[in-house]
Image (cartoon, rainbow, N blue to C red; front, side):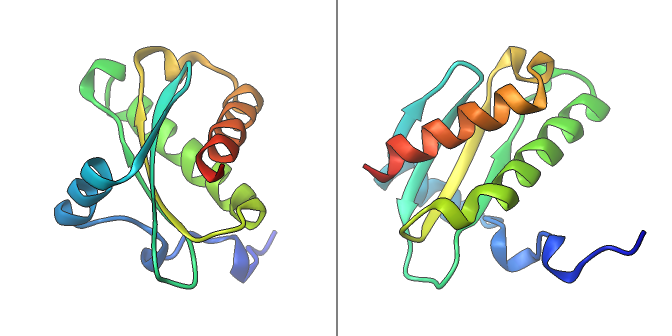
Length: 117
């Protein structure tokens, strides 16, 4: 099955610089959730960006990478529902790796909705 062009997660949609993370942590809003903490700050770009941090306490590299892939996919599927353009950073909590994809998706969308208020 061929992958569609709009299903990727380009580098321009990622928060990658340490200074960007620090700006979002210092100046952005914070929303606590059961499985993660979502930080958000409005940006002046024409799209949203996402950064994901997963500490070693979550699990080994395989588990941490799975958590990051899940959040990127959830973000990719739901970013069209956000009215304004934001930079988001997700800090995963310990039991995040054990939560189902659908539960994590619902939790993420609820947190983004609270962020947009």
